[in-house]
Length: 155
Image 1 (tube, rainbow, N blue to C red):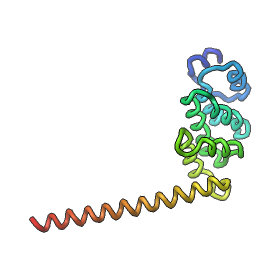
Image 2: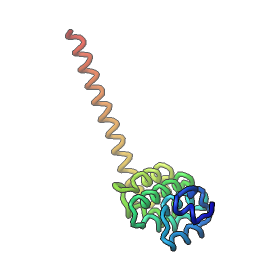
Image 3: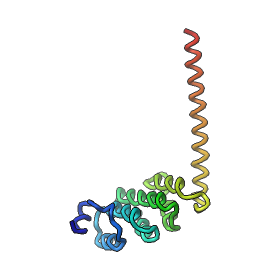
Image 4: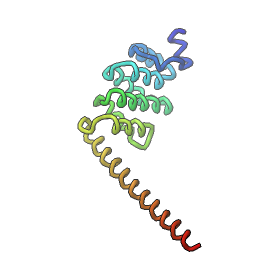
């Protein structure tokens, strides 16, 4: 199957390994650019994929932007680092939108010492909040267990 047909159907784009093919499709205004940029994240060096991921994160189609965020998260998982441009693009998207999972992947897979300041603050926030939620849920479980025990003794 020729690449032109693949752009129309989206089939096989996760195997895309040539950034020049993505650039040409971007210039033509093809569909499935977000899906294809995941392929670049999987198959290309980070420095080659990064500018295309950032461009895909600015696409007008919300779904394709979500796929581009997935590509950023994939890049963080595979490379255990991101480029400054990708860090900036993820920060601009923020944790509440389509970049939420990619930000989580970044906080999980990129070493703390390699994170820029905003991501370090986010890591601290997420870690403290997760710890507090864990403690809260354990205390709720303990109270519920105590109630069940007391109810069982009354009968």
